[in-house]
Image (tube, rainbow, N blue to C red):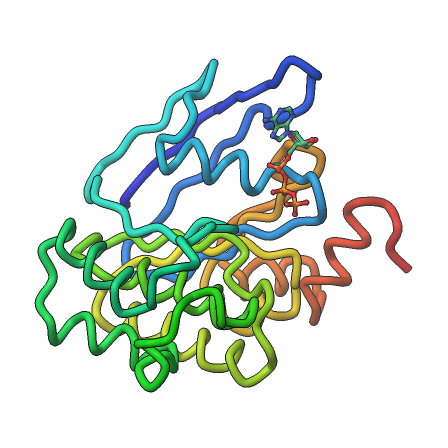
Length: 227
Ligand SMILES: Nc1ncnc2c1ncn2[C@@H]1O[C@H](COP(=O)(O)OP(=O)(O)OP(=O)(O)O)[C@@H](O)[C@H]1O
């Protein structure tokens, strides 16, 4: 196990946030943090990446404390090129030139690495964001809404990248509101709704236990708009 969250609360001044969140992240798995808008996914990710502190409950790190992270939105300096940004971030993470080239190739930006970010489309900026998260040694990779702005080809490539990370023994936690994407890819799932965990655990077991073929159907049924 990598991390265990028990009864975690983070409530903002407007009384929104997350409450009583309990789950474990197991090593070497792909875990989808799924749910609709405002479910609490980004709040939970901010706690796991230590951008914010929880008010109650426990977050116990058992294994790897070093995290690689793809935020849901990054404002890269638009006057710099992808190569300059990756070179700078790689120097902070002590990565080799080969690793820098490799991440740019993985996200399809190697050929355009000398172009300024100002000339990049939304999807290209998102791929640069993905590239920076792939740099470094962290065994836990956290991706906040990684499919945002990606076309179907790059969503398929993103899947391959996550599977490759898992094959290296790494653990991947990604947030999404695309439940079919979560179902296709994840070994485990944490489904949140209205700031709480609706259900969580092994994807196949959850579907089998509920005699359900589709995670989306199960989610709709659980939040009370099922058929
Ligand atoms: N900084 C904040 N101040 C006040 N309320 C917040 C803050 N951040 C999140 N919230 C509230 O906490 C709840 C969970 O929001 P969060 O952004 O974590 O959801 P999400 O699942 O990531 O949603 P989305 O898919 O729409 O991005 C929402 O009700 C939101 O309004």
